[in-house]
Image (tube, rainbow, N blue to C red; front, side):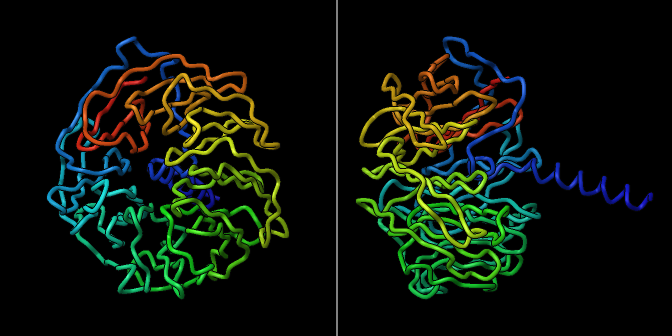
Length: 400
């Protein structure tokens, strides 16, 4: 009995520890779970606790684990990993090699942290595994040399997905289209040819509560469902945009799977059927067409912004009915916490909005005045602090 109790306590402790890590959009949903955050902000905005102004170029978001912040930036075509404590003190800086410098310069993908290792996918197409403590590079893969993939117009952008012992990555080759690598040594576990499409800037999602657990993602011309254990293609659906750009991770809940994109596409909802072996279309909408800002599901509604139509939208999750559209605030990224939307516009404003299907209920807003280039990095909430990356600057705002 004592051993059983000890095992239970160990499992609980492990679970709590795992929940402590912040990856891409927290857990890829864009939903955070902080308590007692401010329901409104002062007119000048929440208190700026600290900022760091020497990240170089880049658009990647932060990852957080064990009260350490990890983020990447580029200086003179070289990528660097920066590690901070929660007070903004720079603890370490690591050169990891070349970065993307052809357009909208700098790293894109957010670091994934798992089991004492960091997984970083560079804009130049290299997957790098580092020791989390020493920052030693343990192994590296090149999508072109190792898998026959090719880089794409704006530089590959993906946050690697770790599922049990596997690291899942879209590499975009004809034979090796999506691969699962051993997270410890980078060896190939399985490879899927998918539909042979190039990669399309989408960080994949794991669905584990169906009969056939699977990986789903969007490549340049298709949405895919891949058996997580074997790499077998379970289903696919044509899904194309003007420039083969599909940066938004899908949203999943209870066999319902929502894909959204800008460039005139909009949103499409599927239902997984036959244990996840196939899909059926539930609804489509030309509204809710975020370009790079993601969407969030709160209750029976989804929220996000437009691309070609510059509105914020709320749609019914089950039917696709548009509940409102509003253009009183610039479109951009959205994350959420406890019934509130945190909207970061491409114009450089941050807004706090009540998540209600009745209207775009803007409570507070303030300008992001520090930093450089585009306002594209997705904000992060951790321990009562809102972290905003704008080009060369990382800012920490007290919102609790």
